[in-house]
Amino acid sequence: MTTLTAKDKQVVRDFFGKVGKNAEKIGHEALARTLVVYPQTKTYFAHWKDLSPGSPMVKKHGFTVMRGVLDAVDKIDDIVGGLLVLSELHAFRLRIDPSPCGIVFGLYFPGDEFTPEVHVSVDKFLARVAVGLSDKYR
Image 1: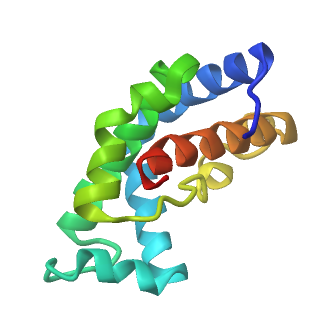
Image 2: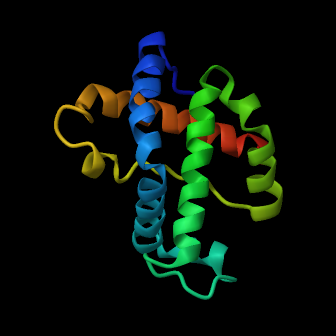
């Protein structure tokens, strides 16, 4: 399992403090891109009438996903325990295999905000979130 150092945790908290201000837009774009890049993901949303990037359901669920990631930031010291309810939902009801949602950070935070150091810490954090969400699969 990926280890988050104290420095990684602080970098993640600082970065996601910026992300929170654009959570709705970032979440929407990340989900929209996921549905295009990983078309098999659409099977989880077959009950939606419109899976196009600008649809209200994609926007709403993208924001929900981003709120979950921001919640994980708040629970960064106990991600598995902190995401227990969401993990159970994903494992037993939705049966979704979690995947990284950080596709668009570089677009929203170019240059000195999404540095290689920030990218590494965020990737480590998102790997921990994926483990937290998949905990009930084991």
